Image (cartoon, rainbow, N blue to C red; front, side, top):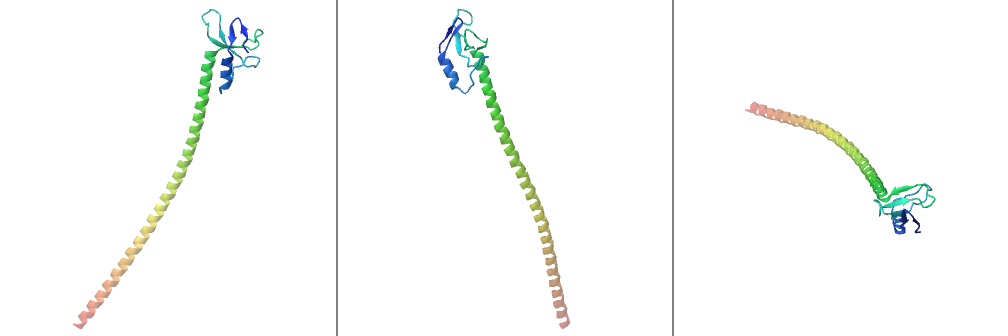
Length: 154
């Protein structure tokens, strides 16, 4: 799979590395995997790696610098990871919102129960005060009867 052209050579190991990664391979306009090549000509870009059409010398004109593609692919992977994290956080937020809603309902129910117990306790307290007052009245009546009976005897 090592074909040569005047501008570069195919790096079979580079193509194998790209196919093993989770990143989709770079394709030419023929929709074929574009092999990675290295500039061999004596020029300012000598040694730089690039993707080119796999149908050399009848190329479709596809060309991308490998370092530019890697940066874009890294950013795409980073964007996917960020989107995944955002989705996870949104899900956690929804779960927490559900828990907050349940807690608010529980709080409202407990507040209602406390209010009912307060009313019930107030009613019981008034009933106890009434019974206490009735007992005092009975004791006072009994004491006054004993007092009058005693006074009549004397």
